Length: 202
Length: 210
Image 1 (cartoon, rainbow over the protein chains, first blue to last red):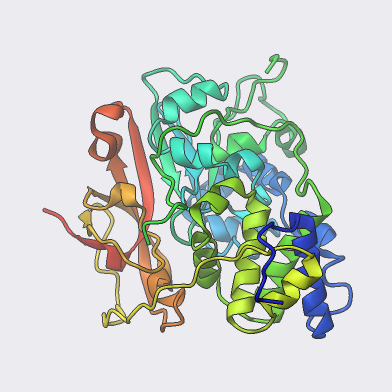
Image 2: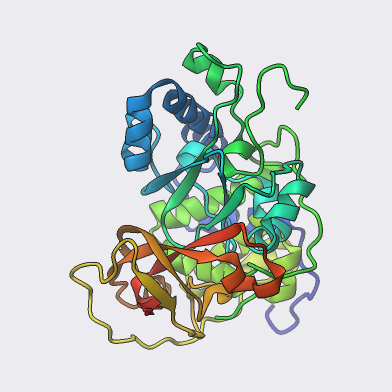
């Protein structure tokens, strides 16, 4: 069999199935483990969790202070912890400094609060460009920051997982946490977008 | 290794497109690839996270760039399971009815002999310089900061040193540092004055800067 190896790669879905079958054949796959993966991922890892963290921080100054001091503990307070969330650091946007997250060498993300990363975050183009040319790249992606605003790029090269605490938009005074969470996006918590004020076309 | 995965600062990749309402998995096999790696790590305990990252970095560069994220997941997972003789490559190819491209073998890496640090060597505000090193094995120091100097913003708790842990060597724990670099110190004339980059670096990668 190995003497004349077929040079044409099998389609990737068939390769995935082949690995599964080989492991099953050896009795190494617990019953139901792989079938449960999509549901387990959705329960455990979601950017909507991050949106609730941001909303709480906007609504509760004490929580905001705890979140910026110890992101891991403050996220765990709301029940958000687990793999790829062992050490979370929350970075705060200010009117004069905008933060944006990347993982240039793979695609590390704070899964418990940002979910599994989206394709654009994992793309070679984003990984290659954002550390070197954040301002033009963000502009291309629809975020045109004034020249006076500093852009700080955070490269996830070790085991810290970052979450951006975006600026709370005008016009949300008196909103409860649920309503605040509803306007927060994953893109804003990574830093390639702002949270739009209510009623904007954005 | 100075591999294809170390993309930070490279040019020529084009636009970044955001997909509206993107699902977690686009195809069932993507969830399967994710699940097989989770199985290998958390149930079979076949390898650690550093070995996993390195297995992906060892993909043929052309395959790495052409493959989607979950194809890289699948390739790294399968490569390690074959290398550790948990599954057999011929069996995989027979079952897949075609070739199953795997990563290239890891380079043999020797222990660096450095002691386990008993306390962080650097503190917030310290100036540090990144050693200009080119490890042949796994490393998490990106090319674009090697030789550059910056300021420590934050000291993170100790994590296993990846250059050792990825090669089955004792992965001594050491602190990592969030180091702030001015963009102009990294990209010279290609950068503006109002940009900066923070990189999270293990202690071994750093020396004191004046």
